[in-house]
Length: 216
Image (cartoon, rainbow, N blue to C red; front, side, top):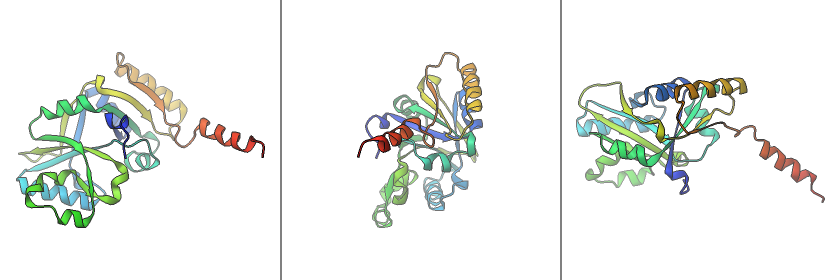
């Protein structure tokens, strides 16, 4: 589960090109769930679209979980993955002012629990996922559209960004170059920029060395 501090933020794991577009254009992009890997998830989204008689339902997925290997491997593209950490409160405040757009945590249910929901619970469908995904602690933005759309832009402000983390497999030279590029795009922003040490941590290795160095 997300601890109290982590719940103050939402993390968007994405590709380098998408992250740079977010920074340069000050926007997030919601896309169609039709190409999601999990067909159960896609099915509920389409079922909801049908029930509310929307032409399109678009979404963007984030997480309130701490950094994990799973997030990097599943939600980013090779060595060019980026994680943008947003302050949750201002992002939710902005979304609450948009028509037909909602944001919030995903619920994780067993099949039995889904069966027990009544017709008055249809509004929950875009924020329900099978319990096998519970470790993702997902947070989602969902938009209903009266027209058929492939994407929808949500305006953001760079002040809402708390940090940007580079993929743990990204070469140091690329990290350095990207720091310079991002600082050029956002010269006045005060978010931190760091390379993930998840798979190559000096502190972890030093702790291991310390263990074997202890007297028996």
